[in-house]
Image (cartoon, rainbow, N blue to C red; front, side, top):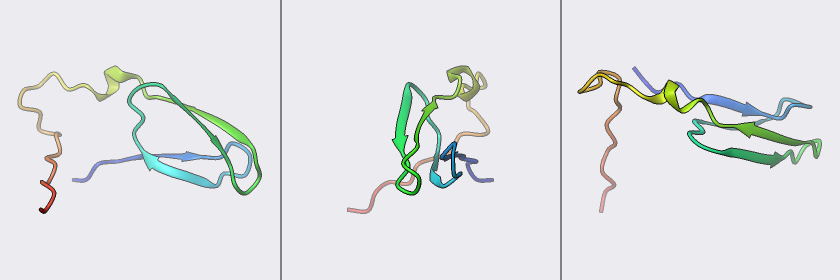
Length: 66
């Protein structure tokens, strides 16, 4: 079971900017295709919290190779 990322797209031409999770704040992006400025807001932080310990949905990070 993998992580499901949200797609962030241009509001005008729907060009994909990136896939990911915004946890806090907002991001303003200018589309290279149509030059529209789009503001993306973070997800509600409470949606990302899990109160179960240990969380069965937690994804372990792989250590970087040295």
